[in-house]
Length: 216
Image 1 (tube, helix red, strand yellow):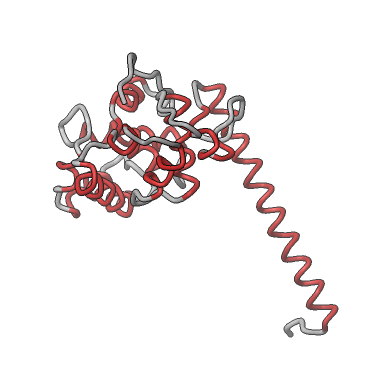
Image 2 (cartoon, one colour):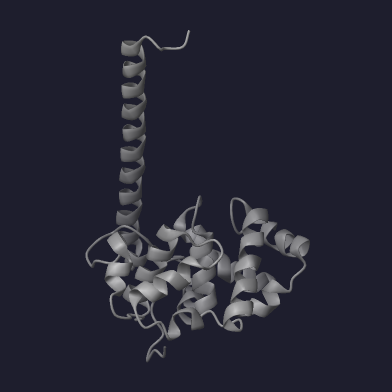
């Protein structure tokens, strides 16, 4: 899918790293892959860091898939590390690139370029190594909101991440202010989940006491 203008991305909060995300479909995919268990800016700065350490100005799926696994893991582990778990993430990045080479000729944009519907695009994203339902929906929303990739039904396929005016994911970040709002939302979700877990445990304990089945 062609774009008249390179989208302005503010996920890494670093000009060069964000510029790479805006012009490189593979960098955007890798950034999304890395976005777990680390701050968002750290994750989306990863593609730029990897490219620099490979001596390139962009990522290449063929080149990354062909890297020696131990050498590639060491490259991601150099300080500052690309991720909190650089070894396992290096494996995932290579798996993603190998999949793109096998199924899309190494062209990341081909994943969405001819997707006719949002449901079809979501299915393709979920087939990518490392992309579960939630990550696929967030990336689909990111494509629609920031990259202009909007097949029919894309908002519906993106679920709760699709609507405008929400601050739930990387798809909603346009700068420091929206990043803060997304971060606050995530903290609220974590707190709610923790509270729900505690309440469930308390109910189970109460039931066990009532049934006389509490363990000694």
